[in-house]
Structures are given as C-alpha cells and as structure tokens.
Length: 97
Image (cartoon, rainbow, N blue to C red):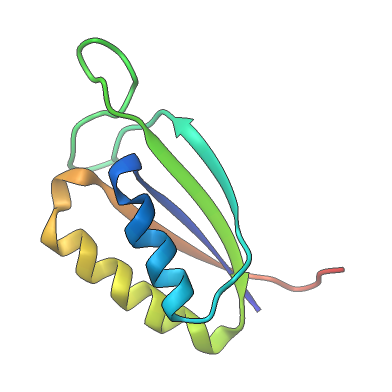
C-alpha cells in the first residue's frame, strides 16, 4: 500500500477527484483552505490581499499498482498549468487497521 499526499490550488479540485475516480481510488482525506508557497517556483497561496489564492491538500491510501497512473495523470495536469502549483508525494504504508 502507498499513500499519496497531493497539494494543489483550489481550482484543481474537480480534476483531482476525477483522477482518483478514474483509477478506482475511492477513499481520501482532504484539508481545505491551506496556505503555502512552492520551494522553487510559483506564487505564494496565502489567502491575503496580496496573495489571495489558497491551496487544498488530500491524502489517499491506495494499492501500489494505482500509484503510477495517478502520478502520471497529475503530472500531465501540472504541466498544462504549472503556475497553479500541483505537487504529489508518495509514502509506503507499512501497516493499517
């Protein structure tokens, strides 16, 4: 099992949900209206007058064989609009109940 943490501009929500659904990934936990700034590129998403946009994040645990397809689809979307800021990080899940 793997966990994917996806951080993204709020504008991406429908696309992120579609990617997960298309790969048969049903479960996730989402955090809304979070703040952040990319480590290399992109504008800050701070919810302020100067930087009004905000991010969302979600984590989903899935079978190993789903991960590459999900990541490929997310990368494709990020490459179409890199200024929106979409990132995904994968962890190995050792145990779960």
